[in-house]
Image 1 (cartoon, one colour):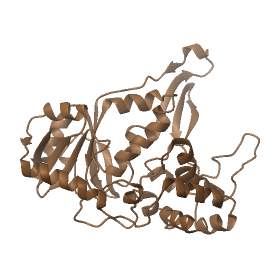
Image 2 (image 1 turned 90 degrees about the vertical axis):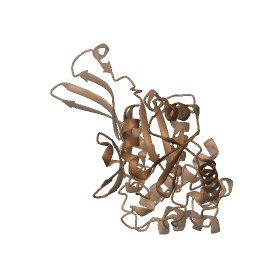
Image 3 (image 1 turned 135 degrees about the vertical axis):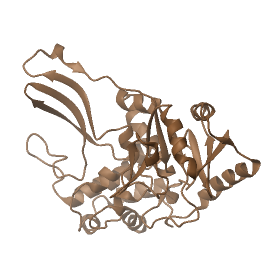
Image 4 (image 1 turned 90 degrees about the horizontal axis):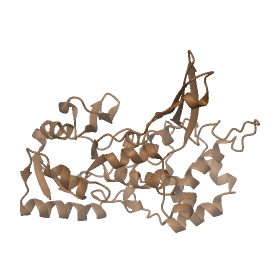
Length: 345
């Protein structure tokens, strides 16, 4: 099913979606575009290239409570925080970020040990993807096409959206997406010409170039295995790194977390919080021993996890080429350049 509306009617579309569930969509802020829960439909803005932070926090919040308790009381009195699966629409997600959800699904629900918090949110959510503008060049940090992700790939979305001039074309990709489109008023029917434009855009998106070195999963996995003990290579790659963790917090596929207990006035909470392998204390053991005290060891871990360990374990690279890690690195470390150098080694 293909429907359409106009860019000028975007707030009407947002209002209609808000009637179906919680709407999370891109909004313009001083620091750039971010995904936010929408309470004012007029705030939704599609005039963006990509958001500063990926939308993974919709399914994997930066902090998440698991158990609430009172200190000094029996364990049996602790109250678990039940997973919440409220209807949610995630609107305007770029194809590389949609792909990241599928990769994260492997960790949180695809290995047999299902994370109920992740799963409840994923099952309750409808994803409305949004094609990149094929008339504008990719940003220099991006390399999603080299990983097999097209600029207008609808896979993984429930509804996929393509802009055609002043029109927005919305096509249902899954049964969930079709039900959502069917139940919404205010959308016009699309013409045969609109159908052709949509299909042509999806096809053209597969040839849309980002960076030019094609990354073969098996090849890069073997290259990184061979380079693991090449200290000179990794020290050169990490020479400027500050271990600030910006790359991991901005990344759509980083999922490391810590479990913390916080107490105040006898009220306790056990919660999950994001963590990062780039932090100095990430591998600090209770004994005081830390197997990764050096920056190069931590950067090596991050890149090997995404491009080697993950491939060996799950058969897919744990990176979608969105470029955020490079774009927001304060010292301009480019993960793709490191991968390119590894390919040449």
